[in-house]
Length: 199
Image 1 (cartoon, rainbow, N blue to C red):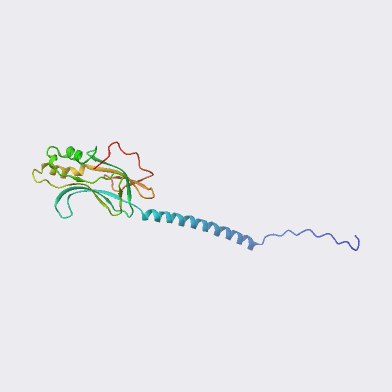
Image 2: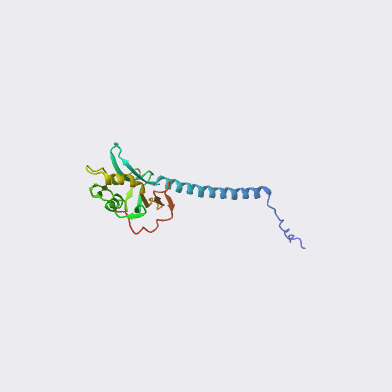
């Protein structure tokens, strides 16, 4: 080796990561994963809150006395939820036979003399039922003359069943069956029955 020549550089020493740097890297990774989990959970919570803020809940009811205590057979649809319900289809059955309208129902249930019953009705097919809205589907006051058919209707109203499919504005859907306590959540409304209630 000459005087002007420099010695060759020493090989670089292998540098191990200190424990502190490993712990910090793991902590950063853990915090990132926790942040991601919190963000996903918050998004799901917001989706649930939105769905709850537009949740409809339809209920079918029947009675034989009006709010003032006067005799009147009634069939009602109420939205007890906090959002509108879009009715896709409605089927009304009397003793398991589907009915088209009020005249057909009165003829099927009440026998001779039903022509004297004066029914007022309101359709529900394709309707949007607002939160708190009360639809008077059918009202039948007692007639002035012979009340035989009216009395039969007052008893037989308990054999009337409503099936109805409705959805929220977010396309969450339910199948209402008046023989059950609560509407059943469904992915989408099934195909409508062959005979629909037209009021």
